[in-house]
Length: 567
Image (cartoon, rainbow, N blue to C red):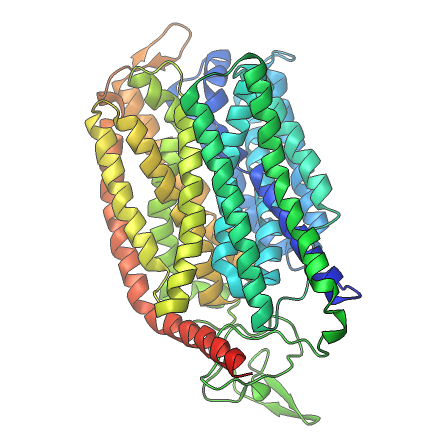
Protein backbone atom coordinates (compact mmCIF):
# COMPACT_ATOMS: atom_id res chain seq x y z
CA UNK A 1 0.00 0.00 0.00
CA UNK A 2 1.72 3.09 -1.19
CA UNK A 3 1.71 6.52 0.37
CA UNK A 4 -0.86 8.97 -0.92
CA UNK A 5 0.51 12.27 -2.16
CA UNK A 6 -0.91 15.73 -1.57
CA UNK A 7 -0.07 19.06 -3.11
CA UNK A 8 0.27 20.93 0.17
CA UNK A 9 0.78 20.33 3.85
CA UNK A 10 -2.74 21.56 4.62
CA UNK A 11 -4.42 19.12 2.26
CA UNK A 12 -2.10 16.30 3.42
CA UNK A 13 -2.97 16.90 7.07
CA UNK A 14 -6.69 17.18 6.34
CA UNK A 15 -6.69 14.00 4.24
CA UNK A 16 -4.84 12.10 6.95
CA UNK A 17 -7.40 13.09 9.57
CA UNK A 18 -10.31 12.54 7.21
CA UNK A 19 -8.97 9.04 6.65
CA UNK A 20 -8.76 8.51 10.41
CA UNK A 21 -12.38 9.65 10.83
CA UNK A 22 -13.56 7.13 8.24
CA UNK A 23 -11.38 4.51 9.98
CA UNK A 24 -13.25 5.24 13.22
CA UNK A 25 -16.55 4.77 11.38
CA UNK A 26 -15.38 1.46 9.94
CA UNK A 27 -14.34 0.26 13.40
CA UNK A 28 -17.69 1.38 14.80
CA UNK A 29 -19.39 -1.25 12.64
CA UNK A 30 -16.71 -3.96 12.48
CA UNK A 31 -17.31 -5.56 15.87
CA UNK A 32 -20.19 -7.65 14.53
CA UNK A 33 -18.27 -10.81 15.47
CA UNK A 34 -19.10 -10.05 19.11
CA UNK A 35 -22.86 -9.81 18.53
CA UNK A 36 -23.53 -13.54 18.09
CA UNK A 37 -25.39 -13.75 21.40
CA UNK A 38 -28.04 -11.37 20.06
CA UNK A 39 -29.31 -13.86 17.50
CA UNK A 40 -27.83 -17.20 18.61
CA UNK A 41 -31.08 -18.10 20.38
CA UNK A 42 -33.01 -17.77 17.12
CA UNK A 43 -30.52 -20.02 15.32
CA UNK A 44 -30.65 -22.58 18.13
CA UNK A 45 -34.44 -22.87 18.03
CA UNK A 46 -34.80 -22.76 14.23
CA UNK A 47 -32.14 -25.41 13.65
CA UNK A 48 -32.84 -27.48 16.83
CA UNK A 49 -29.24 -27.32 18.03
CA UNK A 50 -27.58 -28.51 21.21
CA UNK A 51 -25.32 -26.08 23.07
CA UNK A 52 -22.23 -27.84 21.66
CA UNK A 53 -23.58 -27.46 18.12
CA UNK A 54 -24.45 -23.82 18.73
CA UNK A 55 -21.00 -23.14 20.16
CA UNK A 56 -19.49 -24.85 17.12
CA UNK A 57 -21.31 -22.28 14.99
CA UNK A 58 -19.73 -19.52 17.04
CA UNK A 59 -16.36 -21.21 16.53
CA UNK A 60 -16.99 -21.24 12.77
CA UNK A 61 -17.61 -17.50 13.00
CA UNK A 62 -14.30 -17.02 14.78
CA UNK A 63 -12.45 -19.41 12.45
CA UNK A 64 -13.12 -16.78 9.80
CA UNK A 65 -10.49 -14.72 11.57
CA UNK A 66 -7.94 -17.47 10.94
CA UNK A 67 -8.19 -16.64 7.27
CA UNK A 68 -7.21 -13.11 8.21
CA UNK A 69 -3.71 -14.21 7.19
CA UNK A 70 -4.90 -13.59 3.65
CA UNK A 71 -5.70 -9.99 4.57
CA UNK A 72 -2.25 -9.67 6.16
CA UNK A 73 -0.53 -10.94 3.02
CA UNK A 74 -2.67 -8.65 0.89
CA UNK A 75 -1.85 -5.58 3.00
CA UNK A 76 1.59 -5.28 1.34
CA UNK A 77 0.28 -5.99 -2.15
CA UNK A 78 -3.15 -4.39 -2.46
CA UNK A 79 -4.27 -0.84 -1.82
CA UNK A 80 -6.36 0.05 1.22
CA UNK A 81 -9.56 0.65 -0.84
CA UNK A 82 -9.34 -2.81 -2.43
CA UNK A 83 -8.91 -4.49 0.97
CA UNK A 84 -11.95 -2.62 2.31
CA UNK A 85 -14.04 -3.64 -0.70
CA UNK A 86 -13.21 -7.31 -0.21
CA UNK A 87 -14.29 -7.11 3.41
CA UNK A 88 -17.57 -5.29 2.82
CA UNK A 89 -18.77 -7.58 0.00
CA UNK A 90 -17.85 -10.71 1.97
CA UNK A 91 -19.74 -9.42 5.02
CA UNK A 92 -22.79 -8.58 2.93
CA UNK A 93 -22.96 -12.17 1.67
CA UNK A 94 -22.14 -13.87 4.99
CA UNK A 95 -24.61 -11.97 7.19
CA UNK A 96 -27.14 -11.65 4.36
CA UNK A 97 -27.63 -15.43 4.18
CA UNK A 98 -27.97 -15.61 7.97
CA UNK A 99 -30.71 -12.97 7.74
CA UNK A 100 -32.52 -15.01 5.08
CA UNK A 101 -32.57 -18.00 7.44
CA UNK A 102 -33.54 -16.18 10.66
CA UNK A 103 -36.24 -14.14 8.89
CA UNK A 104 -37.62 -17.43 7.48
CA UNK A 105 -37.29 -16.05 3.96
CA UNK A 106 -35.67 -19.37 3.11
CA UNK A 107 -35.75 -22.74 4.86
CA UNK A 108 -32.91 -23.45 7.32
CA UNK A 109 -29.87 -24.47 5.33
CA UNK A 110 -27.69 -27.49 6.20
CA UNK A 111 -25.52 -27.09 9.28
CA UNK A 112 -22.23 -27.12 7.35
CA UNK A 113 -23.45 -24.40 5.00
CA UNK A 114 -24.41 -22.19 7.94
CA UNK A 115 -20.87 -22.72 9.28
CA UNK A 116 -19.47 -21.49 5.95
CA UNK A 117 -21.54 -18.29 5.94
CA UNK A 118 -20.74 -17.58 9.59
CA UNK A 119 -17.07 -18.05 8.70
CA UNK A 120 -17.43 -15.55 5.85
CA UNK A 121 -19.03 -13.00 8.16
CA UNK A 122 -16.21 -13.42 10.64
CA UNK A 123 -13.53 -13.19 7.99
CA UNK A 124 -14.99 -9.98 6.54
CA UNK A 125 -13.96 -8.03 9.63
CA UNK A 126 -10.32 -9.11 9.29
CA UNK A 127 -10.10 -7.29 5.95
CA UNK A 128 -11.67 -4.17 7.45
CA UNK A 129 -9.49 -4.25 10.58
CA UNK A 130 -6.29 -4.91 8.64
CA UNK A 131 -6.93 -2.03 6.23
CA UNK A 132 -7.73 0.35 9.07
CA UNK A 133 -5.04 -0.62 11.60
CA UNK A 134 -2.11 -0.98 9.21
CA UNK A 135 -2.91 2.28 7.41
CA UNK A 136 -3.53 4.36 10.54
CA UNK A 137 -0.56 3.05 12.53
CA UNK A 138 1.69 3.88 9.58
CA UNK A 139 0.11 7.33 9.27
CA UNK A 140 0.51 8.06 13.00
CA UNK A 141 3.46 5.86 13.87
CA UNK A 142 4.66 8.02 16.79
CA UNK A 143 1.27 7.77 18.50
CA UNK A 144 0.60 4.08 18.14
CA UNK A 145 -0.94 3.67 21.59
CA UNK A 146 -3.69 6.28 21.13
CA UNK A 147 -4.37 5.09 17.57
CA UNK A 148 -4.78 1.49 18.72
CA UNK A 149 -6.84 2.48 21.75
CA UNK A 150 -9.26 4.67 19.81
CA UNK A 151 -9.75 2.28 16.89
CA UNK A 152 -10.05 -0.83 19.04
CA UNK A 153 -12.27 1.14 21.42
CA UNK A 154 -14.77 1.79 18.69
CA UNK A 155 -14.69 -1.91 17.77
CA UNK A 156 -15.73 -2.57 21.34
CA UNK A 157 -18.49 0.02 21.14
CA UNK A 158 -19.80 -1.37 17.86
CA UNK A 159 -21.57 -4.25 19.61
CA UNK A 160 -23.42 -1.80 21.84
CA UNK A 161 -24.11 0.50 18.88
CA UNK A 162 -25.69 -2.32 16.88
CA UNK A 163 -27.54 -3.75 19.89
CA UNK A 164 -28.98 -0.46 21.10
CA UNK A 165 -29.91 0.75 17.61
CA UNK A 166 -31.70 -2.51 16.92
CA UNK A 167 -33.48 -2.34 20.29
CA UNK A 168 -34.51 1.26 19.67
CA UNK A 169 -35.69 0.82 16.08
CA UNK A 170 -36.73 -2.84 15.84
CA UNK A 171 -37.38 -4.00 19.45
CA UNK A 172 -34.45 -6.44 19.47
CA UNK A 173 -35.78 -8.49 16.54
CA UNK A 174 -33.01 -10.96 15.51
CA UNK A 175 -33.88 -10.74 11.80
CA UNK A 176 -33.74 -6.92 11.82
CA UNK A 177 -30.47 -7.10 13.73
CA UNK A 178 -28.94 -9.24 10.97
CA UNK A 179 -30.13 -6.71 8.37
CA UNK A 180 -28.07 -4.08 10.20
CA UNK A 181 -25.04 -6.40 10.28
CA UNK A 182 -25.36 -6.96 6.53
CA UNK A 183 -26.08 -3.50 5.16
CA UNK A 184 -24.50 -0.94 7.50
CA UNK A 185 -20.86 -2.20 7.29
CA UNK A 186 -21.22 -2.42 3.52
CA UNK A 187 -22.32 1.22 3.23
CA UNK A 188 -19.70 2.56 5.67
CA UNK A 189 -16.82 0.73 3.96
CA UNK A 190 -17.90 2.09 0.58
CA UNK A 191 -17.55 5.58 2.07
CA UNK A 192 -14.12 4.85 3.58
CA UNK A 193 -12.84 3.57 0.22
CA UNK A 194 -12.63 7.16 -1.03
CA UNK A 195 -10.71 8.65 1.92
CA UNK A 196 -8.68 6.04 3.83
CA UNK A 197 -5.15 5.76 2.41
CA UNK A 198 -1.55 6.11 3.59
CA UNK A 199 -0.22 9.65 4.06
CA UNK A 200 3.38 10.52 5.07
CA UNK A 201 3.57 10.59 8.90
CA UNK A 202 4.49 13.56 11.05
CA UNK A 203 8.13 14.64 11.06
CA UNK A 204 8.31 17.47 13.59
CA UNK A 205 7.63 17.89 17.28
CA UNK A 206 4.92 20.46 16.51
CA UNK A 207 3.07 17.96 14.35
CA UNK A 208 3.36 15.33 17.09
CA UNK A 209 1.86 17.76 19.61
CA UNK A 210 -0.95 18.61 17.21
CA UNK A 211 -1.70 14.92 16.75
CA UNK A 212 -1.87 14.43 20.52
CA UNK A 213 -4.42 17.24 20.83
CA UNK A 214 -6.60 15.82 18.08
CA UNK A 215 -6.44 12.35 19.60
CA UNK A 216 -7.65 13.88 22.86
CA UNK A 217 -10.70 15.16 20.97
CA UNK A 218 -11.38 11.68 19.57
CA UNK A 219 -11.05 10.23 23.08
CA UNK A 220 -13.55 12.73 24.49
CA UNK A 221 -16.09 12.05 21.73
CA UNK A 222 -15.69 8.30 22.20
CA UNK A 223 -16.23 8.56 25.96
CA UNK A 224 -19.36 10.65 25.39
CA UNK A 225 -20.71 8.00 22.99
CA UNK A 226 -19.97 5.23 25.51
CA UNK A 227 -21.64 7.06 28.40
CA UNK A 228 -24.61 7.87 26.18
CA UNK A 229 -25.03 4.19 25.23
CA UNK A 230 -24.71 3.07 28.84
CA UNK A 231 -27.28 5.66 29.95
CA UNK A 232 -29.75 4.33 27.39
CA UNK A 233 -29.33 0.82 28.78
CA UNK A 234 -29.83 2.02 32.35
CA UNK A 235 -32.89 4.20 31.66
CA UNK A 236 -34.71 1.29 30.06
CA UNK A 237 -37.17 3.38 27.95
CA UNK A 238 -36.78 1.71 24.58
CA UNK A 239 -39.96 2.45 22.64
CA UNK A 240 -41.72 5.27 20.80
CA UNK A 241 -40.37 8.75 20.17
CA UNK A 242 -37.71 8.35 22.85
CA UNK A 243 -36.06 5.54 20.89
CA UNK A 244 -36.13 7.55 17.65
CA UNK A 245 -34.53 10.51 19.43
CA UNK A 246 -31.89 8.23 20.95
CA UNK A 247 -30.96 6.79 17.55
CA UNK A 248 -30.79 10.25 15.93
CA UNK A 249 -28.53 11.71 18.62
CA UNK A 250 -26.29 8.62 18.49
CA UNK A 251 -25.76 9.04 14.76
CA UNK A 252 -24.93 12.74 15.25
CA UNK A 253 -22.35 11.86 17.91
CA UNK A 254 -20.74 9.25 15.63
CA UNK A 255 -20.56 11.80 12.81
CA UNK A 256 -19.14 14.62 14.97
CA UNK A 257 -15.40 13.73 14.55
CA UNK A 258 -15.69 14.99 10.96
CA UNK A 259 -14.98 18.44 12.44
CA UNK A 260 -11.34 17.42 13.11
CA UNK A 261 -10.13 17.27 9.46
CA UNK A 262 -11.86 20.57 8.71
CA UNK A 263 -10.09 22.19 11.66
CA UNK A 264 -6.78 20.62 10.62
CA UNK A 265 -7.16 22.02 7.10
CA UNK A 266 -7.88 25.56 8.33
CA UNK A 267 -5.10 25.42 10.94
CA UNK A 268 -2.38 24.25 8.56
CA UNK A 269 -3.41 26.30 5.53
CA UNK A 270 -1.42 29.31 6.76
CA UNK A 271 1.75 27.21 7.08
CA UNK A 272 1.97 25.80 3.55
CA UNK A 273 4.92 27.98 2.63
CA UNK A 274 6.87 26.67 5.64
CA UNK A 275 6.69 23.07 4.48
CA UNK A 276 10.18 21.56 4.73
CA UNK A 277 11.59 19.70 1.76
CA UNK A 278 12.89 16.20 2.21
CA UNK A 279 10.43 14.84 4.76
CA UNK A 280 11.91 12.01 6.74
CA UNK A 281 10.51 8.94 8.39
CA UNK A 282 12.24 8.70 11.75
CA UNK A 283 12.91 5.30 13.28
CA UNK A 284 11.11 4.43 16.49
CA UNK A 285 14.37 4.21 18.48
CA UNK A 286 17.02 6.94 18.38
CA UNK A 287 20.33 7.53 20.08
CA UNK A 288 20.68 10.31 22.62
CA UNK A 289 21.83 12.82 20.02
CA UNK A 290 19.35 14.04 17.40
CA UNK A 291 20.50 12.61 14.06
CA UNK A 292 18.39 13.25 11.00
CA UNK A 293 18.75 11.17 7.86
CA UNK A 294 16.75 10.59 4.73
CA UNK A 295 15.71 6.94 4.39
CA UNK A 296 15.46 5.37 0.97
CA UNK A 297 12.24 3.57 1.89
CA UNK A 298 9.56 4.80 4.30
CA UNK A 299 9.19 2.54 7.31
CA UNK A 300 12.10 0.27 6.38
CA UNK A 301 13.68 0.62 9.82
CA UNK A 302 11.77 0.76 13.08
CA UNK A 303 14.83 1.04 15.31
CA UNK A 304 18.15 2.81 15.26
CA UNK A 305 21.36 0.78 15.48
CA UNK A 306 23.64 2.03 18.27
CA UNK A 307 26.75 0.59 16.63
CA UNK A 308 26.33 2.03 13.13
CA UNK A 309 25.35 5.56 12.16
CA UNK A 310 21.82 5.61 10.73
CA UNK A 311 23.14 6.73 7.34
CA UNK A 312 24.87 3.34 7.03
CA UNK A 313 21.97 1.26 8.35
CA UNK A 314 20.95 -1.26 5.66
CA UNK A 315 17.35 -1.85 4.75
CA UNK A 316 17.83 -5.59 4.41
CA UNK A 317 21.01 -6.09 6.43
CA UNK A 318 22.73 -7.19 3.21
CA UNK A 319 23.51 -4.04 1.23
CA UNK A 320 24.26 -0.43 2.10
CA UNK A 321 24.63 2.26 -0.52
CA UNK A 322 27.21 4.84 0.56
CA UNK A 323 28.37 7.59 -1.86
CA UNK A 324 27.57 5.37 -4.85
CA UNK A 325 29.46 2.33 -3.55
CA UNK A 326 27.73 -0.88 -2.50
CA UNK A 327 29.04 -2.31 0.76
CA UNK A 328 28.15 -5.93 1.47
CA UNK A 329 27.51 -6.82 5.10
CA UNK A 330 26.85 -10.12 6.75
CA UNK A 331 23.22 -11.10 7.24
CA UNK A 332 22.33 -11.05 10.92
CA UNK A 333 19.22 -11.82 12.89
CA UNK A 334 17.32 -8.65 13.86
CA UNK A 335 16.94 -7.72 17.50
CA UNK A 336 13.75 -6.53 19.17
CA UNK A 337 12.72 -3.13 17.84
CA UNK A 338 14.08 -3.79 14.35
CA UNK A 339 12.13 -4.93 11.32
CA UNK A 340 11.31 -8.66 11.42
CA UNK A 341 9.94 -10.83 8.67
CA UNK A 342 7.18 -13.15 9.82
CA UNK A 343 9.63 -16.09 10.02
CA UNK A 344 12.18 -14.06 11.97
CA UNK A 345 9.47 -12.98 14.42
CA UNK A 346 8.17 -16.53 14.85
CA UNK A 347 11.67 -17.79 15.64
CA UNK A 348 11.85 -15.57 18.73
CA UNK A 349 10.76 -16.60 22.22
CA UNK A 350 9.11 -13.22 22.72
CA UNK A 351 6.67 -13.76 19.84
CA UNK A 352 5.36 -16.99 21.33
CA UNK A 353 5.17 -15.59 24.84
CA UNK A 354 3.07 -12.74 23.43
CA UNK A 355 1.00 -15.20 21.37
CA UNK A 356 0.15 -17.57 24.25
CA UNK A 357 -0.52 -14.80 26.77
CA UNK A 358 -2.85 -13.20 24.21
CA UNK A 359 -4.63 -16.57 23.88
CA UNK A 360 -5.18 -16.75 27.64
CA UNK A 361 -6.87 -13.35 27.61
CA UNK A 362 -8.91 -13.19 24.42
CA UNK A 363 -9.76 -16.91 24.33
CA UNK A 364 -11.45 -16.87 27.72
CA UNK A 365 -13.05 -13.50 27.02
CA UNK A 366 -14.59 -14.78 23.79
CA UNK A 367 -16.03 -17.77 25.64
CA UNK A 368 -17.99 -15.40 27.85
CA UNK A 369 -19.15 -13.22 24.94
CA UNK A 370 -20.20 -16.14 22.75
CA UNK A 371 -22.13 -17.77 25.60
CA UNK A 372 -23.55 -14.65 27.21
CA UNK A 373 -27.07 -15.54 26.02
CA UNK A 374 -26.98 -18.96 27.65
CA UNK A 375 -25.15 -17.70 30.75
CA UNK A 376 -27.86 -15.10 31.34
CA UNK A 377 -30.70 -17.57 30.79
CA UNK A 378 -29.04 -20.09 33.12
CA UNK A 379 -28.92 -17.46 35.86
CA UNK A 380 -32.57 -16.53 35.38
CA UNK A 381 -32.39 -13.43 33.14
CA UNK A 382 -34.93 -13.34 30.32
CA UNK A 383 -33.33 -10.40 28.46
CA UNK A 384 -29.57 -10.75 28.05
CA UNK A 385 -29.11 -7.85 25.60
CA UNK A 386 -28.08 -5.54 28.45
CA UNK A 387 -25.15 -7.84 29.32
CA UNK A 388 -24.04 -7.97 25.69
CA UNK A 389 -24.20 -4.18 25.55
CA UNK A 390 -22.37 -3.76 28.89
CA UNK A 391 -19.55 -6.05 27.80
CA UNK A 392 -19.18 -3.96 24.66
CA UNK A 393 -19.27 -0.57 26.41
CA UNK A 394 -16.85 -1.51 29.17
CA UNK A 395 -14.64 -3.19 26.61
CA UNK A 396 -14.47 0.20 24.95
CA UNK A 397 -13.24 1.84 28.16
CA UNK A 398 -10.57 -0.85 28.51
CA UNK A 399 -9.36 -0.31 24.95
CA UNK A 400 -9.34 3.46 24.79
CA UNK A 401 -7.90 4.09 28.25
CA UNK A 402 -5.20 1.43 28.04
CA UNK A 403 -3.92 2.74 24.72
CA UNK A 404 -3.61 6.31 25.94
CA UNK A 405 -2.37 5.50 29.45
CA UNK A 406 0.25 2.99 28.28
CA UNK A 407 1.57 5.53 25.76
CA UNK A 408 1.80 8.16 28.52
CA UNK A 409 3.83 5.90 30.80
CA UNK A 410 6.17 4.90 27.97
CA UNK A 411 6.91 8.58 27.35
CA UNK A 412 7.21 9.31 31.07
CA UNK A 413 9.08 6.29 32.43
CA UNK A 414 9.53 3.65 29.70
CA UNK A 415 7.02 1.31 31.32
CA UNK A 416 6.71 -1.89 29.22
CA UNK A 417 3.26 -2.28 27.68
CA UNK A 418 2.96 -6.00 28.64
CA UNK A 419 2.70 -4.94 32.31
CA UNK A 420 -0.75 -3.55 31.52
CA UNK A 421 -1.74 -6.89 30.04
CA UNK A 422 -0.65 -8.59 33.26
CA UNK A 423 -2.74 -6.21 35.36
CA UNK A 424 -5.78 -6.79 33.14
CA UNK A 425 -5.38 -10.56 33.32
CA UNK A 426 -5.36 -10.49 37.14
CA UNK A 427 -8.61 -8.51 37.20
CA UNK A 428 -10.12 -10.83 34.59
CA UNK A 429 -9.40 -13.83 36.83
CA UNK A 430 -11.29 -12.11 39.65
CA UNK A 431 -14.22 -11.51 37.29
CA UNK A 432 -14.41 -15.20 36.38
CA UNK A 433 -14.41 -16.14 40.05
CA UNK A 434 -17.32 -13.78 40.70
CA UNK A 435 -19.35 -15.35 37.90
CA UNK A 436 -18.49 -18.85 39.15
CA UNK A 437 -19.89 -17.94 42.58
CA UNK A 438 -23.09 -16.64 40.89
CA UNK A 439 -23.88 -14.20 43.70
CA UNK A 440 -26.68 -11.68 43.14
CA UNK A 441 -25.51 -9.09 40.61
CA UNK A 442 -22.32 -11.00 39.81
CA UNK A 443 -23.20 -11.18 36.11
CA UNK A 444 -23.39 -7.39 35.92
CA UNK A 445 -20.00 -7.02 37.59
CA UNK A 446 -18.52 -9.89 35.60
CA UNK A 447 -19.73 -8.41 32.31
CA UNK A 448 -18.02 -5.11 33.10
CA UNK A 449 -14.78 -6.72 34.30
CA UNK A 450 -14.48 -9.11 31.35
CA UNK A 451 -15.32 -6.30 28.93
CA UNK A 452 -12.67 -3.94 30.33
CA UNK A 453 -9.91 -6.54 30.50
CA UNK A 454 -10.66 -8.02 27.09
CA UNK A 455 -10.44 -4.50 25.69
CA UNK A 456 -7.09 -3.91 27.36
CA UNK A 457 -5.66 -7.12 25.88
CA UNK A 458 -6.63 -6.09 22.35
CA UNK A 459 -5.52 -2.47 22.59
CA UNK A 460 -2.16 -3.24 24.24
CA UNK A 461 -1.14 -6.19 22.05
CA UNK A 462 -1.62 -4.27 18.77
CA UNK A 463 1.08 -1.59 19.36
CA UNK A 464 3.26 -4.03 21.32
CA UNK A 465 3.65 -6.25 18.25
CA UNK A 466 4.64 -3.27 16.08
CA UNK A 467 7.17 -2.03 18.64
CA UNK A 468 8.85 -5.41 19.04
CA UNK A 469 8.81 -6.62 15.43
CA UNK A 470 8.50 -3.47 13.30
CA UNK A 471 5.97 -2.10 10.82
CA UNK A 472 7.20 -3.47 7.50
CA UNK A 473 5.40 -6.82 7.88
CA UNK A 474 3.01 -5.66 10.57
CA UNK A 475 -0.16 -6.56 8.65
CA UNK A 476 0.85 -10.23 8.51
CA UNK A 477 2.22 -10.36 12.07
CA UNK A 478 -0.99 -8.79 13.39
CA UNK A 479 -3.13 -11.40 11.63
CA UNK A 480 -0.96 -14.24 12.95
CA UNK A 481 -1.66 -12.97 16.48
CA UNK A 482 -5.36 -12.68 15.65
CA UNK A 483 -5.36 -16.46 15.06
CA UNK A 484 -5.84 -16.56 18.82
CA UNK A 485 -9.45 -15.50 18.32
CA UNK A 486 -10.60 -18.62 16.43
CA UNK A 487 -8.19 -20.81 18.42
CA UNK A 488 -9.41 -19.42 21.72
CA UNK A 489 -13.02 -19.64 20.60
CA UNK A 490 -12.55 -23.30 19.67
CA UNK A 491 -10.77 -24.25 22.90
CA UNK A 492 -12.74 -22.27 25.46
CA UNK A 493 -16.13 -21.71 23.80
CA UNK A 494 -16.52 -24.66 21.44
CA UNK A 495 -14.93 -27.36 23.59
CA UNK A 496 -14.75 -26.23 27.22
CA UNK A 497 -18.05 -24.34 27.52
CA UNK A 498 -19.97 -26.52 25.05
CA UNK A 499 -19.00 -29.88 26.56
CA UNK A 500 -19.35 -28.84 30.21
CA UNK A 501 -22.71 -27.14 29.57
CA UNK A 502 -24.11 -30.17 27.73
CA UNK A 503 -22.95 -32.40 30.59
CA UNK A 504 -25.14 -30.37 32.96
CA UNK A 505 -28.07 -29.74 30.57
CA UNK A 506 -31.41 -31.51 30.21
CA UNK A 507 -32.51 -32.69 26.72
CA UNK A 508 -35.54 -30.99 25.18
CA UNK A 509 -37.99 -32.24 22.53
CA UNK A 510 -36.63 -31.76 19.02
CA UNK A 511 -33.00 -32.54 19.80
CA UNK A 512 -31.85 -29.46 21.76
CA UNK A 513 -31.12 -29.04 25.46
CA UNK A 514 -31.31 -26.48 28.24
CA UNK A 515 -29.76 -25.82 31.63
CA UNK A 516 -30.88 -23.52 34.43
CA UNK A 517 -28.80 -22.74 37.51
CA UNK A 518 -25.39 -21.53 38.63
CA UNK A 519 -23.89 -25.00 38.13
CA UNK A 520 -24.28 -24.81 34.33
CA UNK A 521 -21.13 -22.72 33.78
CA UNK A 522 -19.37 -22.89 37.18
CA UNK A 523 -16.64 -25.31 36.14
CA UNK A 524 -16.10 -23.32 32.92
CA UNK A 525 -15.35 -20.17 34.92
CA UNK A 526 -13.01 -22.01 37.30
CA UNK A 527 -10.92 -23.38 34.41
CA UNK A 528 -10.78 -19.92 32.81
CA UNK A 529 -9.63 -18.44 36.12
CA UNK A 530 -6.66 -20.81 36.17
CA UNK A 531 -5.93 -20.01 32.53
CA UNK A 532 -5.86 -16.29 33.37
CA UNK A 533 -3.30 -16.90 36.11
CA UNK A 534 -1.03 -18.58 33.55
CA UNK A 535 -1.51 -15.53 31.31
CA UNK A 536 -0.37 -13.24 34.12
CA UNK A 537 2.90 -15.13 34.45
CA UNK A 538 3.57 -14.94 30.72
CA UNK A 539 2.84 -11.20 30.60
CA UNK A 540 5.24 -10.54 33.48
CA UNK A 541 7.91 -12.59 31.68
CA UNK A 542 7.43 -10.59 28.48
CA UNK A 543 7.56 -7.30 30.38
CA UNK A 544 10.89 -8.34 31.90
CA UNK A 545 12.34 -9.44 28.55
CA UNK A 546 11.30 -6.22 26.78
CA UNK A 547 12.14 -3.63 29.41
CA UNK A 548 15.29 -2.70 27.46
CA UNK A 549 13.42 -1.94 24.25
CA UNK A 550 10.92 0.26 26.07
CA UNK A 551 13.73 2.09 27.81
CA UNK A 552 15.15 2.93 24.37
CA UNK A 553 11.74 4.03 23.09
CA UNK A 554 11.44 6.28 26.15
CA UNK A 555 14.89 7.75 25.50
CA UNK A 556 14.02 8.33 21.84
CA UNK A 557 10.81 10.21 22.62
CA UNK A 558 12.51 12.20 25.37
CA UNK A 559 15.48 13.04 23.12
CA UNK A 560 13.25 14.26 20.33
CA UNK A 561 11.29 16.48 22.70
CA UNK A 562 14.49 17.95 24.15
CA UNK A 563 15.91 18.67 20.69
CA UNK A 564 12.69 20.38 19.68
CA UNK A 565 12.84 22.59 22.78
CA UNK A 566 16.44 23.56 21.99
CA UNK A 567 15.46 24.62 18.49
